[in-house]
Length: 378
Image 1 (spheres, helix red, strand yellow):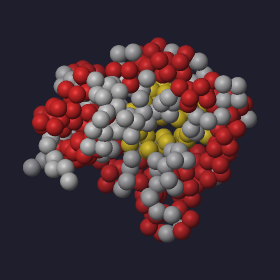
Image 2 (cartoon, one colour):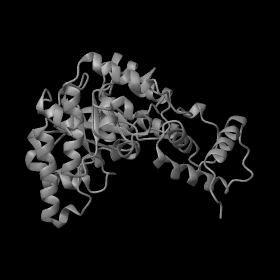
Image 3 (cartoon, one colour):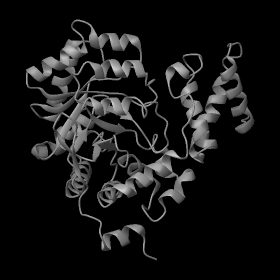
Image 4 (cartoon, one colour):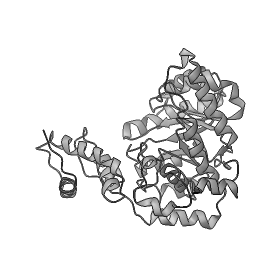
């Protein structure tokens, strides 16, 4: 039986994914970027398997038109891997790294250390800040001697070419804080979590606003910690005959979003690199009408609850209420069985807070979870 991939290889599938201009930064990036490049091992060991794996993945990505690498000091040995194994390809790719919101001095120290590890003189895209999920971190950006000041100094000194800011998954994507950072007009690019299921509060306001400002928009965590790369959920019929794997479906769905330029994905093996790059090549072969139809099918499935911090009921700080309820919806409404363990863990954690005063909305949600996903509490 001919697979979707074999059929498209025979007919109109291009060899490479397309590249796009990343907003007013002017950077030309591939629509898929390599997030957290690395093999997971110790880069200083010089193990031939690590070298060969990194080089092989890079060759596939490059052959398929990929040219964007996104890393961070917090991504384990990723920066060191780039310096050990990919620095001799530096002229062939665009490179991004990050700093957490503390102050200008730490911003510059972080960047200098990253450049040393990656054996390069300058970074193409610098996320300063990475993560502003509370008012203290936001204040650290705007204060005198703050992160924004550090980022601008990095550009002045030629250590970074363009500035951006980014958020991780479930960090409380507060609309007010996002708008404040965008309104500075300092940042040319924003990176936000996005995935197959609409679990973000930014579609109606932030994405259009960022595009209005001419910003490049990058999506990260496209498979919800790998969940939608392993399972189809309720989406199989929407992608049957278009792609072969659920991971490809997740990537393609986001690439078809009219406001998103680039999606970051982890390439953990040569097989995964080819699989993911296929989504970028499939995207290149689609008409505008086909892309619109993909988005229509996906958005018609709806979204999950408690998307914004100000709409999420108050809960103990140690309890991941918002994240757990997202996973509950992923399990019950979108058919992802792999989400259930997170929900069961949430129910077990609830036992630690027998006296917490939940509001009516939270109480109803918790009772619904207990009825749907009962677990034995020991």
